Length: 109
Image 1 (tube, rainbow, N blue to C red):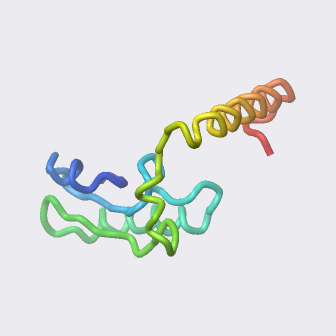
Image 2: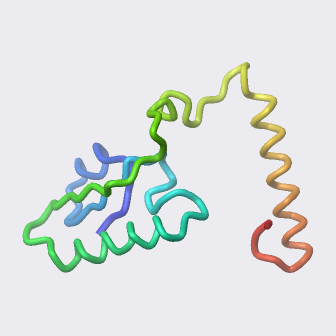
């Protein structure tokens, strides 16, 4: 059973069971830190393992990334308008992880 967001690619591969979540790539199990959503998506996958009666069965979760579908046009977009801000955010994230690691925490708070 596969949990994924790239429906066209995964279905083309012909996996036996597929739980599709229409989220940005890298987030097939739900939004970061949304434990309830993640739990429900995993439950959907476990239910599919029990209920699928034929190969190549796809189930779509009911969740949406946001009410506005504009995220699709801007997801992973890097250009002159956001390059510096993304670089700064990356540096800040790496620094937070370094601090957490030095303090013996697994992830930043």
